[in-house]
Length: 408
Image (tube, rainbow, N blue to C red; front, side, top):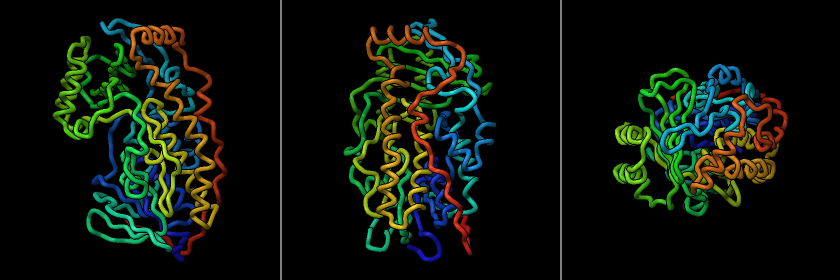
């Protein structure tokens, strides 16, 4: 290990898991560099949830008050039939299994910026670059970056999402680990011409769903289209024209506000399109390279637990590295302590939002019947999976004689 600290760690990705891991690693005496392919911290994005054990992680980082201040006060979710008529109205937490007054829903950009602000003075951030090659040897990992720069680190951690480049380099092709759940989705922002405020509308017909989500009283809404489909080819995922054609074909005969949403998707400058998938790996580390968050165990947005698993996983990985001088032992301890929690939350696709997109008329009617039995009042208990892991107590901060501060 590097003698100036507990060791040098390169973290790939500066969204949620990456900065959270950097925070705890720095606290425990590691020298951390974070590389991010974007030109800066990504702003915007669909609202995300921080639930259960992840709330405790945010508290330990000292960022919980900021997240509480940014909490989105969504007051109702209205489910609609294919003709736009009302099927059910429920409290948002009754749908996602959260606890009102404890669990949080916040703009994704708020969380990423709060996390970055918490570590930017103590961690070296390299934006507009990414890992191009990894060469491991007995004493570290030699890294070649896309920019051509070459550096060496004691350890490398991939926190670079569902389509992790780090995972591909260290563990092999994505198709070995990606489990397609049978749906594709697209998200964009569009003008709020619907008069929506603090609410979400979810429209369904068998195998297809659309959502309009008004965060507060803003002038825009988040629009989502999702549909059951055989696993698309890489060409469909990469080519904007092909994606637009697929969406038009799937939703071309639908009524309600669907034509307006489809048109918005076609003209949005940066619509997001992907498959609904999970990552399942036999192990989360190989030699001196480990993975955290979506790169290791993406649960899919159908569980609503991606951000929470990222925060909890970052805490657990840093704790294990702080507890063990040997990285192999540390990585094994991280996985042993965390995998049960991950497995439980990935399994929420059978009880969570996945149930909101039935593929048959009978299943849709059964879902609507269940929704009508739910109360419009907030639930008092959450899903057990969200709190199924008790965090180890934070370890004492490492004493450093010198801390290097780098900002780009």
